[in-house]
Length: 113
Length: 117
Image 1 (spheres, one colour):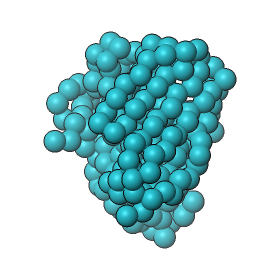
Image 2 (image 1 turned 135 degrees about the vertical axis):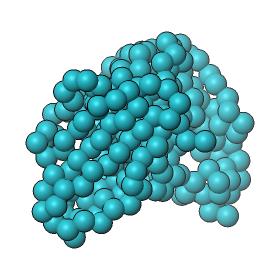
Image 3 (image 1 turned 45 degrees about the vertical axis):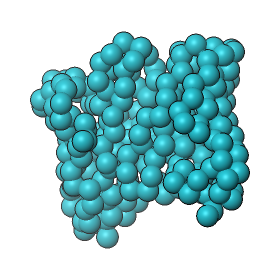
Image 4 (image 1 turned 60 degrees about the vertical axis):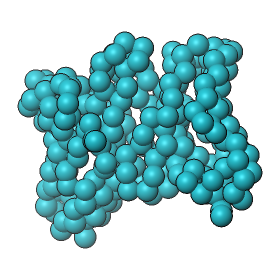
């Protein structure tokens, strides 16, 4: 079973600071997704990266896929309290709607005002 | 609006009873849906794959007789927690993916918080 390890597990920083969350595996990903989950709700997809070395930006969030497609990072610039939540990387096991999605261990982010 | 809807959002039941959770895809047909379980402060663990018109596929370690899955239509999958015990208390989440090749996107229900007392 492919494991997706995320680091750090928990992160509490002050509003305005920058942070990076990492997702690593010993296996190669066909693609990798990042989700954000708020308490009491289901995860919401932020981005999908497919190509090694790919960089995608979503406002203050920058997602990078490693060249070897074994790792990914999420960088948040000037964090805001609204960024608080559980960030999950995930690996779909294919491109069809029948493909399982396996989630990483998660990073719980708390932004202090 | 929600693409995948789960019901109920919260349920409290007595130990030994059974609880049914529904997952509906609202604007697309889903031949496959997935059920996850999430303990407090942890990530989502895949429990099973729900297949329309056939038996569900369970992940290793998940008791199929304990967690009954029925996918009787292209828009509805149900998870029944049978003979619930306090250790079954958890947050259960379903998902369905809208086909789209490399742009296939999974949508998640809002989750069901089950408390067994």
